[in-house]
Structure formats: structure tokens, C-alpha cells
Image (cartoon, rainbow, N blue to C red; front, side, top):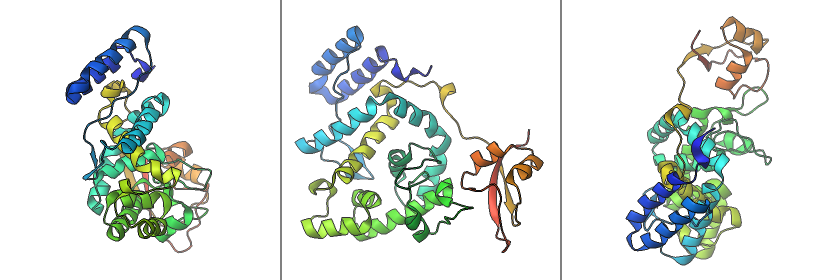
Length: 303
């Protein structure tokens, strides 16, 4: 059993550390710790006095901002199964995603937007039709250079989708002047954000009124930053051997058609399941390639 629901001394230790940071509020925190230690009671999760994401400040001393952040922090702190899985998946992807974001010129902290969108699941799918790490809709994906058809859906390609998301965010930032507004545009569309900026005469996400989903979006990203950067402060203690690490693999280029991916995989010494796990963007059991287009596949190391 993973350790994330062991909420006696680990959560107490985490809250004690936060209490040292928050100073004057430490008495109330110590009282909360006592309740946890004796009754396993669910308590209010304290907020930081200062918080920045994307290099932009969140005004946590404003009452309505504090309430909005508190809502998302509670929702994710006490959604144990989801948060535990994110903590386990994160090491498999973090270094690569941060590297791709850095190369594309957007803040690496957009990894927490990815966490909000898909929980580090490259095969995530929404009933609305959004798919992949970054939950692109088909039309938006195509607009940003991704191939989406019945045989290949690059929304499920971790690197290509990450770079496409970065392009979207850079363009939104150029139009809005704020990374938080760029994140809002990722959620509701750039046209909608620009319309609201004009309508409200504002250029600051935290001074604007939003619909329910977009109004929670930045705070969810901020809450996940706090939880994923300091899980021990919130009672999550996952051992090193319980983390899912990046796996070593090999790449190969293919420029021909494939009549049957299962038999092709067997010839390469892997199973169809492994082929699909490493290349979830392959959507059919075959590949028609009359134009001899080159595709790059990732495969596990030969055993």
C-alpha cells in the first residue's frame, strides 16, 4: 500500500514545517496537528503568505483570492488517490517535459498546468473530445501542427503535444502580456480571454471575473504546484521505490506501411501492448503509408 493516506505523524510534521514559516499562525496549526495526531481529524489546510507561479504573484492576502486558492488546495490535498498517482507518475515525465518547455521558451512551471489537465497521463481522454497530456481538442491540435486522424493522433505524443502546447501559450502570452492570462486562454480560448479583457478593462487574471471553470483554473495550477513541490507538507510520503521512473528505450525510424502492428512488434522483440504503451499516438492496428512518410517510434530496450 502506498503511504499517502498515513495521515498521523507525516501530516503533523508537514504542518509543523508550514507553521514555522507562517509564524504567528503556528499556535492554531499546532492545535490542528494535535487533533490529527489523536483523532485523525480532517483539518483546514493552511495557505502560504506569499506565492508566485510563472514568476507572477498571486495576491493571497485578498480574502476572495485566499478562498479560491483554499478551495483548490483542499480539493487536491484530500483527493488522496488522484494526488498519489500524480506524485508517482511525475518522475517518469518531469525532466523531459521541463526540458521541452524550456526549449520552447515558456516557464517550466507550466508542468503544473499539464498536471491539472491530465495528471501526467499521456493517454488521458475527456468526454468532450479533448485528449492526451495537454487535452487538446482535435481542431486546436491541428491548428498547432499536430496530426490527428484515424491512424495517428499526435495529441497522445508526449513531446509533440508539449511543444504544441508551448506554442499556444507563447502566442497567448504575446497577446495578453501575462502567463496567467495565457493559462486562462488555454482553458477557455484566446478569443474569449481577449474579449473579457476588453469587456472588463483589465489585464490581470486575479482582478477579473471568469466563468466557473476558468475562474478555478489558475488556483488549481497553484495548488498543484504547492502539493507536488512539497508533498510532505500535506501528508504525502511516497518512498523512492514507489515512484514510477523514466524508462530507458530505443528509437527507430519507419518509412513504410505496416499491415499488422502486432506482428511487426513481435519481429522487433516486443508485444503489441508494449508498442502501444510507448507509442500511444498509434491509433490503428495497421499503418497505411503510401507517401513513405517517416515516423519515429520509441520501443523498450531488447531483452
